[in-house]
Every structure is written in structure tokens, then in C-alpha cells.
Amino acid sequence: MRVNNISNNMYVYQGQKEKPVHATAEVKKENYNLKISDRGAEYQFALKKVKEEDTFRTDKVNAIKEKIQNGTYDISAREIAQKMVKDIFGLR
Image 1: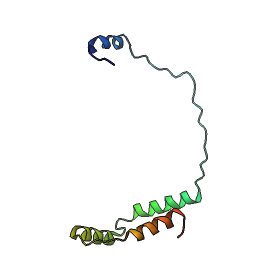
Image 2: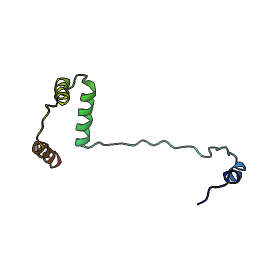
Image 3: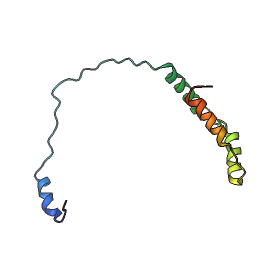
């Protein structure tokens, strides 16, 4: 694709003008019902609680941040994998 002479290509767009849009029909409003699954409702409840709580586990987060900065934070890859498997398969 060649784009050597852009000014010639711009002539194509100069002839086009905006056209006004007019509404021709009334929009009918419908009522919709939405049912959230139990798991979705639990998620929304938990999310709401987390947002309400300003100091959610800040002590634990700060302790981990301090360990990371000091270079003393150590976590087992096995523990992470086990928790991931439990979460994926719903083994709580």
C-alpha cells in the first residue's frame, strides 16, 4: 500500500458532509427482570463488604510489604499450588 501523496487522498473526504439524524419512531420502554445467581449474589455481598471496610487486613498487608522490602519474605510454591487447586475445584 502506497501513501505517497496524502493530499490527493484527502479530496475524497472533503465532499462528504455531516447529515443530521432525525428520530422517526418512538422508543418503547420495556421492563426487564434480572435474576442473579446465588454465587453472583455472594460475590456482590463480599465485594460490598470489602468496599465498606477501610482497614481490610492492612496489618497483614503492611507486614508482608515490610518482609518484601527487607528481603525476608518467603512463601512455598507448594502452598500456593495447593490453594489454587482447592480454589479451582471448590475444595474449601
